[in-house]
Length: 248
Length: 80
Image 1: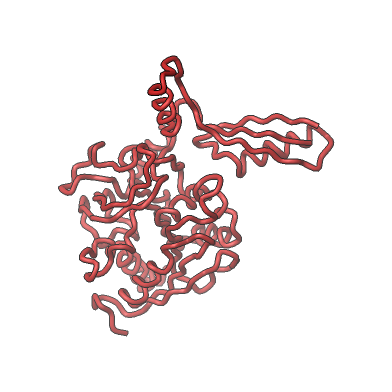
Image 2: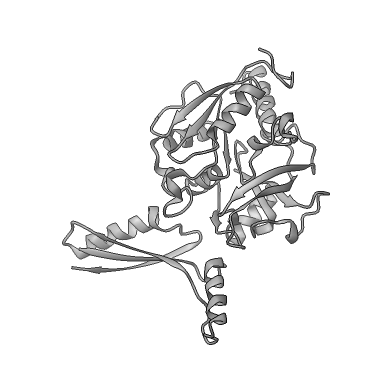
């Protein structure tokens, strides 16, 4: 299969979960399929099996209208039981924006989201620093690299208790922090009031990542920004490595 | 049994909506209003006559779904 970037053959089958109210599902599908040449399976939230999939993405949007709290209801969708098991078995799970919020509500990642400090829905470019480049989602980035990726959310103000935060920091679970274009992590660079400028975290095991910025919105040259691509390509690199060594 | 449930952000957690309302009250001249907290109010009918059982259920609902106890606290009243 011909691939724009020329790095990969189709080798992964990546599931994109569709909740009622997901609206970035097709953007993810487009990037993975048309830009990166992978197989994509759209998974309706009522499915109870993820058999045959090599990775799962929970896309952005407003699942269940954000009723009650963002992600609070999606978390009880039948597919989430399967996502939990998939994560327990070591499968790669990426949550973007609303997907991140769902992972928090489901307890697959620690913490919770508060309303943005400004109370505004923020839709703009942000810069994030790759704080941990040794994850299945960032292995194609350099440590400390700055990525320009847009955010679009009203509830991205990450909060957790001080003990959990200290644990995240100590275990290099903070993967992305909001920063200035030249990589300074300062409060002014944080769009939403997130604790410690947190834009993305991973679980202790390293196979589940949630981030607020939208890498699928900046993953091809025609959009004049390809920074988001590194995240999807990292997943492919990681999977390729596991396949080659027989570990799945 | 009817349950009336209030969910608010925990004390000590910044409530941006509460702050915005506080500023608006201040500019309306209510200078003595402080510590505004915004929350959610929910009510529901429960087909359960036993108060203790009803309370156990409502508590479980709050813990599992109605409140996110990382950031929120809840209280409820039960009435016949």
